[in-house]
Length: 483
Image: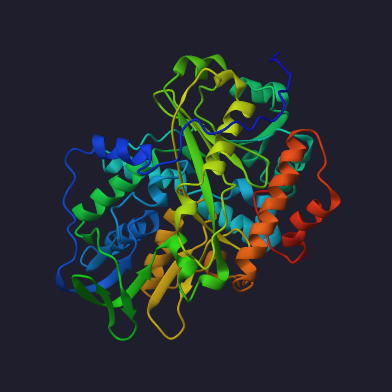
């Protein structure tokens, strides 16, 4: 039996401030010694499809288009370099929607939730097939996904996942684990019990992004980094204006994700939250001591979730999705240099995994996540145009962005198929309240939710007014957090 003593929730100052570029990207660029060039756009360019955004969604869309029609002219522009944004900063969790059946059933109904989960079940095999076919080492580790309860208030998150899978006849997708069974995968005095989802893997997210970039260039995509789109003149054709040139194209795909919170067609359906991680030095000896050798991706049952995973060299990443909320769609410094959120991520490391106390935190970084009102991504076409979009991954884009690429490729090709029939395309997405109410109200709810969850972690109950504010999103039919 493992030590069941529980340390009180600690909130130390951050060991290191969050900085950019993230360690993921630095490691990926060092590994990538022969990167093909992707110069900024200069002059005029004709394309059949132009993609704005060189993260996961844009890159997967480009590859899907070229796979379906190798002759199609695809141009992709990225304001920075591929991997600079959230696609190079996230935790690297790759999974679909089996782990979210409990709340996707609330949003989509039983059949819609199962349809989405079955489609999402193709994600990990697709990433595996890509890395094998392209001979790319993206650190793919198919260890499954483990959700644990670390306080009584989180038990429902674990138990509900198991119950929903049983009710829908897919109990093999959500396997209940006792405290002892959880300890066989990762020992912590905080872990009460858990649920294991076989559908889950981890990758080095920036390596995956850069591998997708190389594949796009190899397949003939006209890729241009450090090329910011200044204006989109919608029409027939559409014209994208950049500092050095322009692209004339019949179809446009806007794949800017977090930045879409400031774009007219999507701003009322998105808000941004900050998510921060800390990364330890390599300590494979300590990782082995706590028995975490199966490569499982792990989260707890908080609303503003802790998410953690290992790396092949024995590092541990701990993340906290509790960062500041955006205002007016602006992506400002709160998404990259918020010290309190980095400190919360480090506090999560020390509280949830005390067996790693000797592991020094080497670096920290943050980034924005694009959150929709129902916590699911959405895809569509701007009315009376050939401008398509996708956004709202809500912190879970590393896997579902592959689905997004298939959907957006079908929309751009005007196909009526299995991808455009998914509820990610067909459902009506709730609209958020306008600014300044969205930003100010969201900040108030965030503060209340953090207070409620910190109290629960310490075995206390937050004051009634605080709990009432934290419950407001549910009362108006919105989802916030993970449960």
